[in-house]
Image (cartoon, rainbow, N blue to C red):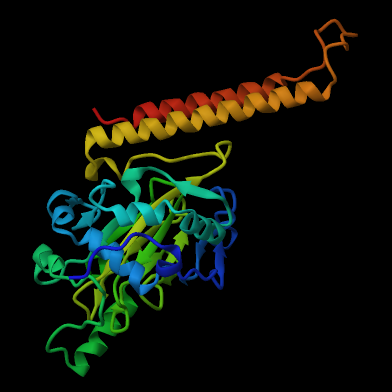
Length: 340
């Protein structure tokens, strides 16, 4: 087995801007979200060497034994990797190059939400179950199921074409339809798709899957309902999902933990959730204070008191009260999402 590599953007990234994007307006969601972009067309982000290192982290014995979970939403997921357990995952998704690429694709400057949401991984289970996932090679290779005949390929294609993610099709999704807890996600394909049939990320109106390993889609998953569909004619489908929020602290943040509680350890999520929310609020209040000082300075001092009100009006009371009410609601959501 080759030695683990340190993240190198020149070696491990191959970003090309998405060739097209579906807008929120096209989905009838123009009044929602933080960006006009709903979902991108698949685009390349990680090289095969980069994918190999990501897989090295998320297929390790320690991750398989300590950082995998099952829930009603998905049969097998890996998440909450600490930096010591998955150093490449952390270095890659925190890198300025990856953050810039995802931000450009999304049409808004973004940052990762929390450490425990870096590199969340969805594994499709085959006949060998979780034991089969452990046997996956570090470098993805074309794979199909043994003994598959031409007639089987036609059957698989028909199943994939009919699969819209609903329970009426009789298939089992890798991840069922849901809204994400955070504003944006980047969904990265870590499996070779050359023989894969199906296995797309399905929106309620369209399916999207990269044409190759290392491709991804960026999606405003907080507002766009989606599912991870089952892949046919292959013994693996592994995708990695990293969640993002707006970099600008003044942009509305509607994050919650409704889909997170069941698959996350209490003390870890309580700490990281509270820390990110407190830091964001600190930045938000500092930015608003700076705005007030700048506006006050634009009036040229306190000489103007012609109306006896103490100078020019800097604080517009109705607007300020509405903004403060939003911060109270933000604090209330922060509190309500903590796990007891």
